[in-house]
Every structure is written in structure tokens, then in C-alpha cells.
Image 1 (spheres, rainbow, N blue to C red):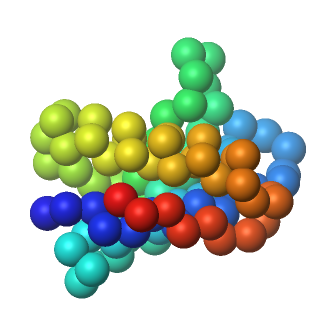
Image 2 (cartoon, rainbow, N blue to C red):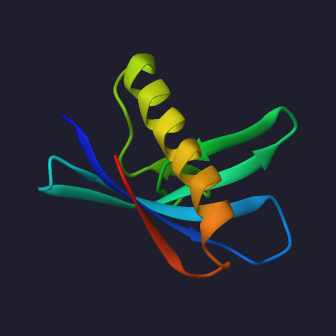
Length: 97
């Protein structure tokens, strides 16, 4: 699968979340609500999740292996950096993948 579109929506809230991202694969499948989060060691992505009955959060969609996670994180963070330079906060910034 190839990433064909990344849309970055920066958030203005206080806290560690910096953006919410949608990623399109092969112009046919999209995953919404991937979060860009500021951690102690820099930015990272968190996959979309849902709170379960036991109070824990479980990923709804996620990469199966670390190689794909690395590709996804690298491209999302590059798109986030590019969007940070180009777009005001709160607006979608499409970035070709």
C-alpha cells in the first residue's frame, strides 16, 4: 500500500496533542484521527483509538509491523512540519504522499 494523501489539521488546544491527521492509502482507503503528540523525546504519532468498557484505550486501526509504523510516522511528521510552515492552525493542509 502506498500513502497517496496526508491531511494535517493542527490543533490550538493546550496540551501535548499538536495535530490530527487523515492518511489515504492508494487513493482508496483512509484512516482518520491519527494524532501527532509532543512527547519527552519529540513528536510521535498515536493511532486512532476507542475507550473500551474496562476504561482502557484500544487502537481501532494500526500498522502490523514496525517497518510500516516507521514509514507512516516519518511521512506524517514530514507532512506536519510542512503544514506548520504553510497553514494557520485549525485548517486542513493536504500534503501529497
